[in-house]
Length: 153
Image 1 (cartoon, rainbow, N blue to C red):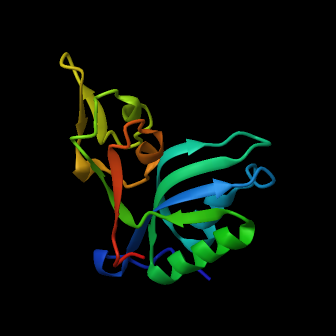
Image 2 (image 1 turned 90 degrees about the vertical axis):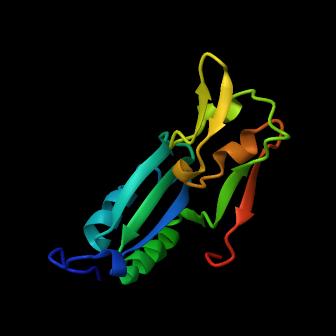
């Protein structure tokens, strides 16, 4: 199933993607991420998680490993009932629309959106952005925009 633990992964044969995982309430208490590591030899970096027993859960994460293991891990997630969304784009801020309210900074899991003090200016560092799109839905001015990466779709 998974590559042996002794297999050395290099940047050339490593596959990584940013994912949003939604867990239905019937499986939030299952060791899903543990199985990705143990059974599929995948690495993960959690950027944001909200898991509550008996309720839907959401995880924003980077998942990486050997491409074959990655595909098998995604299949496992879907078979387990996890809704998987690939983040196939980049988030940009429309400076003309932004009125510096700061709402987006509260949700940003990577610190790409932050408030510069004492000016109270909302700053956006695109290179830190994981494209999780959480800021897009929360922005009252609709200043955060997604540009699709056609190669990733």
